[in-house]
Length: 94
Image 1 (cartoon, rainbow, N blue to C red):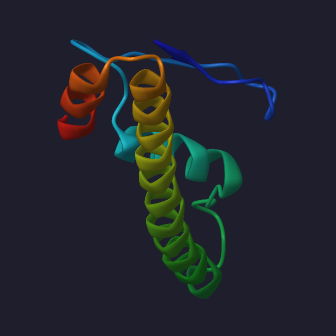
Image 2 (tube, rainbow, N blue to C red):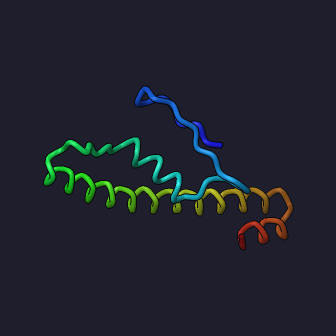
């Protein structure tokens, strides 16, 4: 379960089954906090906002995935340093 902070004044909870949230779900949560597109906006503005939102989603997802890879690399190095090279190798292959 992921509890979002109360940045916009309206709290919400997002749940998942059988594991944590996917990078795509996290990116979607992030972009939803950054960009809100009103249905009442002028059609040209709304179209631009949707295009910006789609581009931001790609960028945020890219950096979330990069962060996950770097974190796993750090964890593998620490596990290897602790004397568990087999475990580090198995974790790296996940």
